[in-house]
Image 1 (cartoon, rainbow, N blue to C red):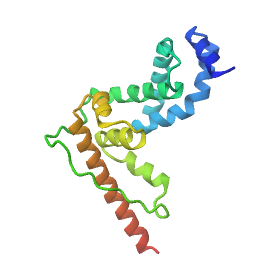
Image 2 (image 1 turned 60 degrees about the vertical axis):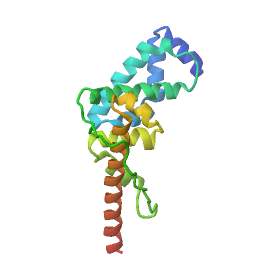
Image 3 (image 1 turned 180 degrees about the horizontal axis):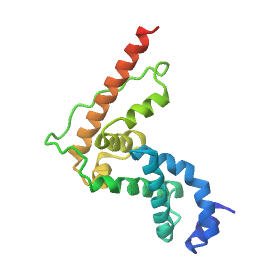
Length: 179
């Protein structure tokens, strides 16, 4: 069955089609949920909640743009909705901070290590960093999604980069000492 046919059947609330769509995209969308969740369990809950919203709103999808991108945005919004209620973002007065450049020696820093230290960031920094650096949203879009100012988005990104840079540099020094 083609993706268009699958979407068409899901719009008719065909349970078999919904199950097939879930199996087709669950792993990719779980990775999105995991990136924005505090734990594996929370990511699983967010995945389920996100798919319920997808199935509820699939009639609104009008074959414009990427269907996977449409679902990804729903997953991100579903996950971030929990943070909006908690006021976990640091509100700042500065319009913008200088963002440090992250220089990574790919031979000494693994993708697993990068993902680990990103997940160790405080929630407010992790959310903004993931949205901006990994998913390509603008500060204006992030501000709207998280209901914060663009200055707060920029500040949280800058602080996330500072923390990541410090951890990477410390790790590289540690690895150089063991060489």
